[in-house]
Amino acid sequence: MAANTIRLTMAQAVVRYLCNQFTEIEGERVPLFAGVFGIFGHGNVTCLAEALEAVQDQLPTWRGQNEQSMALAAIGYAKAKRRRQLMIATSSVGPGATNMVTAAGVAHSNRLPVLLLSGDTFSNRRPDPVLQQVEHFNNPTLTVNESFKAVTRYWDRITHPEQIISSFPQAIAAMLDPADCGPAFIGLCQDTQEIAFDYPAAFFEPTLHHIPRARPDLQQLDKAIAALKAAKKPLIISGGGVRYSLAEEILGNFAQARGIPLCETIAGKGAVLHEHPAYVGGIGVTGSASANAMAAEADVIVAIGTRLQDFTTGSWTSFKADAQFISINAARFDATKHRAISVVGDARESLREMDAALGDWSAPSTWMEKGRDEMAKWDSLIDELQKPSNAHIPSYAQVIKVVQDNAKTEDLVITAAGGPPGEVNKCWRVKAPNTVDTEFGFSCMGYEIPAGWGAAMADENRTPIVIIGDGTYMMMNSDIYSTVLSGHKIIVIVPDNGGYAIINRLQNYKGGASFNNLIKDSRVKTPFSVDFAKHAEAMGAYGRRVETLGELDEAMKWAQANDKTTVLTIPSDAYEWTPGDASWDVGVPEISARDSVNEARKDHDAIRAKQRIGV
Image (tube, rainbow, N blue to C red):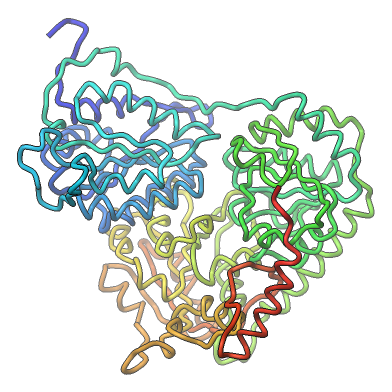
């Protein structure tokens, strides 16, 4: 071995390389990769696990219960760190790998970084077919790991030990690039992991990474400034990119100084406080009547760090046909949607340059006054909906009020699919920046509890509060056990409304019969409600079932004082929802034997007639 080389197996070299990557958070140098979530099996146990065990004090490995959920925990960690620090998830070949595909979809759609390392089949093919190998008769190079190509930003398979020298730096660059951020997948062939190779010592030198901040093109910025100066009713839509750019403060100051009402997407919620003078609520399908009223009149929309998905735009029915979009986004793909003046650049730096060039311009004061009036009406409505009542079954809005009243200022609320995301988006009043994590980009059922585990690792000074529907809880709950094992406390609130109530609502709203969503409307012998509190206790957590809002208040105080994960469950109304929704295009049958479906189709045709053409 030459003096300037180090002889290691490929797996050992991967681990040593990852241990020598660093980043800075608030001036402090920290490992870029904070840890590994791992379930070991053939393909990653004899070589990769051997290498990880040797550095467990430097790069800790956490044992998950399901490959999908541990990758979701890694995503929750990255989101809590605002993409500044990452986690790794590793699996064996076969079903261990494919279990992570859904999590990769979550990371990809939400522009979140996670490094996925999966075992792969033998590069020499000598023992083929190996256990769990899915063979393709016409292409022996294909394995199940090809599934990740559709849901990752970077994909590679290591068939020779030298390939990691070029591959891993590219994977890290993709994960840290604000324009291309997302999951990276690298398949590690089993036999290649064992091979010893003389790696250049320079490959393992400590590397300090910085998140790049692209500045906007001056010509495009000038166009945006001219359009904004001509606006009479401008509106800001703040997306998740604002938070990842650390642009919250400058955005809040910009909106207030320029007199521009500011609304938020689901991913952007929490960039400004609820009481911010320019804030007019969440926008879109799960948004507020206040923000949607402002969007309907806006002549120039400044969309910052948002991909403008259909829940934000009301399937493109929420804006005037001639409204001009200015899209500030690190990703060119997102910035050029819907005839927008595309300002491709970092949100914080683009706002700074725009603000400096605007001089003394501000929007007409009457427009901001309208925004505050609309917001005041919305707040009054939420106040009314959240009042305690004598109703036998509490509403989501009432449950959320009790939970928030008992949440500490810095506590993080986490939701994902089902009813909670919309209700939290409408009813949760943000007390401190970056205290909301709602995964609605991929709308992944099962994200909530693993993400709570990851977020608890990311910041031990606050408690993640997971609000999860009973249906989603049944889909993925095993990381309650993980949090107990690892000592990372979360609080889980389970409003039990008897099944997939939000989808039943959509089914009914579009004229359909209640079918296969609520448990009582499914093919069951006897409707039965799970005792979620006892189930949590069986996994080592504390649990309590309550029946009333008063009991929930008492239980929340108990949960906050506990020293480990606590699950609280309360019955909730399956038919009472907070209003304020925009339109949503989900497709309704053109013809049906049901009169209610035919009527819904007429209404849906009217929705589509309002849609903005995206060219």
